[in-house]
Amino acid sequence: MFELIPAIDLQGGRCVRLLRGDFGQATVYGDDPVAQALAWQAAGAPRLHVVDLDGARAGAPAHLEVIRAITRRLQIPVQVGGGLRTTASVERVLRYGADRAILGTALLESPRTVAACVRRFPERVVAGIDARDGRVAVRGWLAQSDTSALALARRLAELGFQRVIYTDIARDGALAGPNLEALREMVQRSNLRVIASGGIRSVADLLAVRDAGAEGAIVGRALYTGDVALGEALAVLREKEVTHAR
Image (cartoon, rainbow, N blue to C red; front, side, top):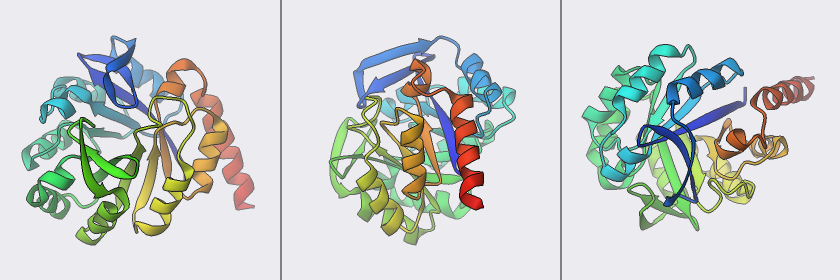
């Protein structure tokens, strides 16, 4: 079933959203990440997406205690990314209660770490591919590579990854709508299950992402602003799922 996954991005211990990955354009939406996580769970979220922005920038997790506090209070699974560039850091977030660990920069810069993680945790590591103009960005989106997002995804599928979170940086936090063309290509050609991220602003966008073949969508700013009401959106998705199945 298609999953609508609320996002909590952590910066300085607070819930924030960046505009197109720009650390200088952060909007603060709350000082209590645990309370926000509980609110999303209470509204019906099937899963929570947590990104340690400070960790992504520093190259090592910076909010482990916050992550542990969140996972201890929630009954729904939590997927965590940001600064996971060693096997030890992946082990730690999983030990601290994360259901999935998301690898990003390491996918390009630490192939041995990536291979070790996918061997040890094949069901629990997820590729996080963040793209700008089709090319992979790394180090908290501060550095741009020449690697094609699709080419990287295909290599990771061969390595044993099963799932990718695909983010279009130009759309992220901008409420500009998802990049459906790039998403469809990733779904059809990557040989991975795809979770879409970036730009979702309405229930119509969620339905379009689902119809493009994604298994889920991560939503951040639109939930905080109220452009998407989590409970209502989940109800529509369930209704459409039943209708589609008939």
